[in-house]
Image 1 (cartoon, one colour):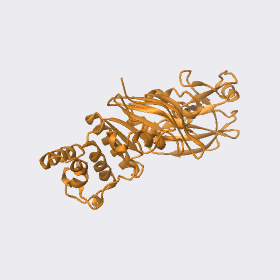
Image 2 (tube, rainbow, N blue to C red):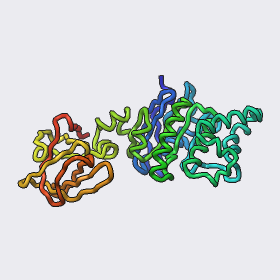
Image 3 (spheres, rainbow, N blue to C red):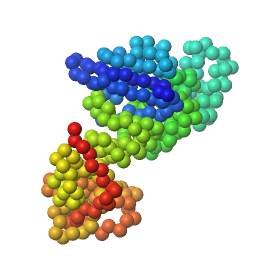
Image 4 (cartoon, one colour):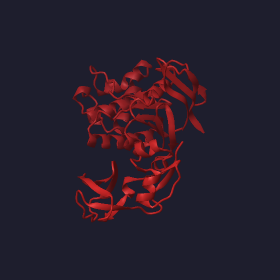
Length: 332
C-alpha cells in the first residue's frame, strides 16, 4: 500500500511550468529517488512535499492523511539539506538533541536517544565536539542523525552528498542506505547524480522538464529505458538512428524507432574497410573508454581494463553487438 501519494501536482513560476501533473506513489519504508538534470523540477517537487512551496494544482497524501496545505511543522516530515544546516555554536550532542528539547522531552530520555543515534551513525566519540571541527562526511551524518532522532514519518533528502568529494561521497551513501534501512523511515531522495539514484534506490523516477519520463526499480530503468532521454541520461546509452542501425548494426527498424546500446555492450574489432574510426582512448582504472567516430557522431564503448583490445587512435573498426544486447525504443 502506498504511504506517500502525489496526485496531479503542477507548479509554475512567472508563467513557466515547472511541474506538469506529477503522479507518484511511494511505499512505506521505501527509499525512493527523484533524479534529473538541473532545472527539471525535482527540488520544487521536494519543497512541495515538505510544505515549503504550495502546488498550483493537485494534492499530497501522507499515511492516509491529506497534507497539501498543512504548514511544514505539522507534516511530520524531516529534511536533510545539502548544506547540512547545523547550528555552528552547538556541539554534536546539542545539534542532535535540539528537536527533542523543543518538544520538551525529559533530559534522561534525550541523552539516551542521542547516545543511541550516535552509535548508529558511528560518531559516539564526537559527542562533545564542535560541529565545525568535523569533516564533511561527519557533519552530514550529524545532520541525518538530527532528523532520524525525531522519528518523522518521512525523510526528504535534498542532494545531501553533493558537497562531498568522490571517495567520501561513496562511503557516505553506503552509510546513508544502511541507516535508512535500519530506521525503516520512508525516504525521498532528490539528486542529479545518476549513480547515486541507481545505487541507493528501491524505486526511482526520472524527471525532465517537469514530466516523469520513467518510474521503476533501478535495474529496470537502467536496462530498459522507455525513451531516448532516459537511455542517455541514466544509462549513458549509445543511440542509433534507423540509418545507423542498418549500416552499423545490420538491424532494420522503422522511422519511428531508434536503437539503444549500453556503452558496456558496445564491442568492436579491427576492420580496415570500416567507416568507423577510434577517435580517442581514455583509461579510467578498472575500465577503458573508447570513443568511436562515425561521420560526425561519437559512440562510446567501455571495456574492462584487463580485456585484450589491441587498437590505437585512428584505427578503423566495425561494431559487434550480441542480439540480446540492444533495445529498440519507440519515438513519441
